[in-house]
Length: 523
Image (cartoon, rainbow, N blue to C red):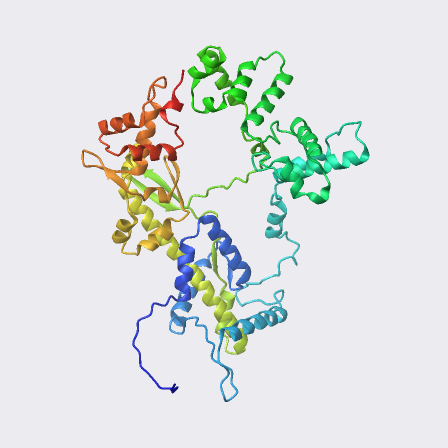
């Protein structure tokens, strides 16, 4: 085998994304709250950025920043990972590892040598280190006011279990075993509060505890009788409902729940399938009594564990507000930037960069941070511009939705919007990702307006969301004593000019959590 070296020319095309382009795409797809966090992080890590304060110097600062952009545009270079070793003459090549180490050292040296209490510019600008002036730290206040982590279901139940009284005749050894058995059972409850595991299996999983099945059974009975809400520790839906019915009968002895208990214990499957006449015939009661008992079962909760969930409510912040302009008979959009921090480049660092006496290391540190700040500001500005253009196209295409409601939502492929705006379809997808808009009809996800659809017999385009809204309207208006089957729903939609297959109706009905006709029937 022969091994030799040689030089070869090769012509190829490569697509290379600059760092600022990558950052621009990341900023574009961020929701308002995520963008707010990103800006806060940049304010913390980049000393050249500062919060914008309203004042006469704001326009001067912007003009100065724009001039700096033009001056430094030619000198910008891409961030390229360079693994080139040290040159033979002993000089080190510029590598990313060296840059990162150098910036870290400069940052530490710069922060130590910088006397922020005494430095003042010629424009009556002074910077005081936070905390030295006795003012409260807003970020620390926010952290102090942040809600603590909510207790889990097991933690809440464990607190109740430790306060539960054990049988008075139990010996200390029996009490310890019973308490331990209850803790093991609570640890194995699912989110609904059910024990889906057999007690014998618990014994196998905890051999070191030395607890028998009988002790587990006794602990489970105590959990079911003592812990709140009632139904905790049930092994299936039937047992869960029976525990709640029995507790209700003990609390309200005058209330007769005999039929309700009979339905749950013997006819639960028939209740799920709405077979009320069959239940009435088998149980020897009237259909009216069965129907009334079925309605009474709604007072009991099939998932008691979820009643103890401390769910975190995520507030939706609209990225834009759409309003109707009565004067010009049109809808207009404006971006909602009230929560976003208004940031700008600190002019002090721009002056430092032009200081001829500034050492090279400090100048590099300031220059790199200024470049990063400009990229962020440009990306945010581009995000706002692109998002507003996309929303304006949506307003134009979905005018009937805003005027008449969801049933008039039209299909709007992202490719159509991309072609109209002259941008890539991926850009449109990032622009609508996790964005919400506030309209006169409520708050909607922006992505909802982009969907496929069908064509009515009259030749009008209708989105799938509009078809679902029309289907919901038909089901809401049906005779509940004789509800419409899927085939009849197809015919009703066809009468309204919408022709779709039966399987499509069944699919939409399931997506909308609408039961079949047999379960919708009322007796």
